[in-house]
Image 1 (spheres, rainbow, N blue to C red):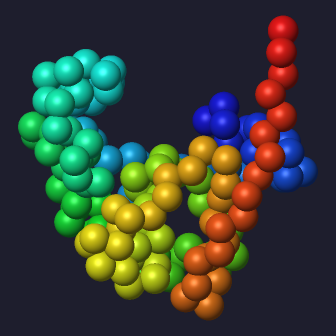
Image 2 (image 1 turned 180 degrees about the horizontal axis):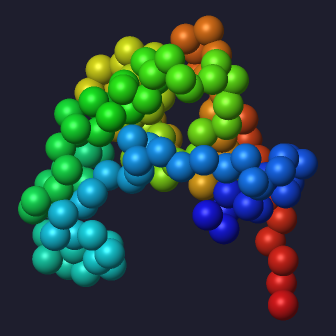
Length: 137
C-alpha cells in the first residue's frame, strides 16, 4: 500500500479512495515465492532461456488462472470505466494481454518496465515513460 499512497500523493488523489482487488494480485510463484532470483539461476542456469520462466516454478499459479481473474476484473460491470490500476509486473502484463486480446507468446514479449506506466484505451495500449528522481542521502 505504500507505493499506492505515493502514487496518490504525486497525482493529487485522496489515498482514502484506494481499493484493493484480489483478482489483480501478483502471480503466486509457488515454491519460488520470496526466493532470491540469482539462487534460482544458480540451481537452473538455463532458467532465463524462456521469457515465461516464472511458470517453471514448482507449484506456481497457472497462466490460465491469472488470465481468468484479470478477465473477470475487466468484465465486471461494477468496475468504473475510468480508473487507475496498480499491479505487479507479471499480472500487469497479463492484464494488458487480456485487454488487447494478445496471444500467450505476446504476453511474455512485453516489457516489464520499472519506469513506465500504460494507458489502456480504445483497445490500444500506450506506454508512458516516467523519469524517476533518485534522492541521495
